[in-house]
Amino acid sequence: MMRGSGRFVPQFGRSGISRKLITAANEGCLSSLSQIHHALQKNPEFCTVDVVKLVFKHLDPAPLAQIQPWDSEGNRPYSDRAVKCLALLADVSVAAVKNPVLKDFAAGELVAAVDGVCQWLNHYFGSVRPSSRIFMAILDWDHSGWEYLLVVARLLQPYGSDVDDEECQGS
Image (tube, rainbow, N blue to C red; front, top):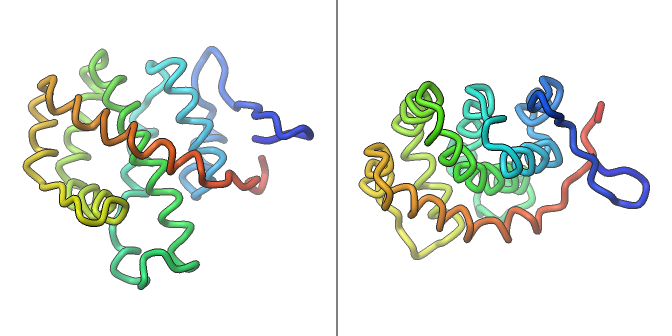
C-alpha cells in the first residue's frame, strides 16, 4: 500500500501475511502481490499454501490465447500479475526448502501448472523456449533446478518492478 509520500507501507507483521492481503492479491491487486513478494523476501516462513495457490492462479495461460497481441492493453492486467507471480516462484522455492508440507503442495501445483508457467516465460522472453523438462527437473528438488528457477525469477524482477502498483480498492 502506498501512503502520501509514495512510501511503501506493508500489510504484514510478525505473524505473517494478512488474510486481507492474500484476498486482495487473489483478486489481482498488483500492490498486494508486491507486498507479498517483499514479505517473503524478508521472511520465507510467511509462505503458506494460500500464497502458493494465488501464485499459480495468476499463471493461468488462458489470457495469452484469448487476447492478441499479447502486449495489448486488454492483456496488460494479466501480464502484470503473471510477471509478479513468476518472480514470486523464487520466493516459494526458498520457502519450500525448509517446509516439507509446502514443498509437496508446491510440487503438485507446479506439475499442474508447468505448461502455463512455460507459456508465460515464453511470453516474456520470446525466442527463449523453456521446456517442460526444465521445470520437471525442479520437481526433483535438485540444486540445479532451483538455481534455474531463481535465475529466471531474478531476470523477471526488473520487469515486475516496472509495473506500477495501483492502489487497490479497500487497501
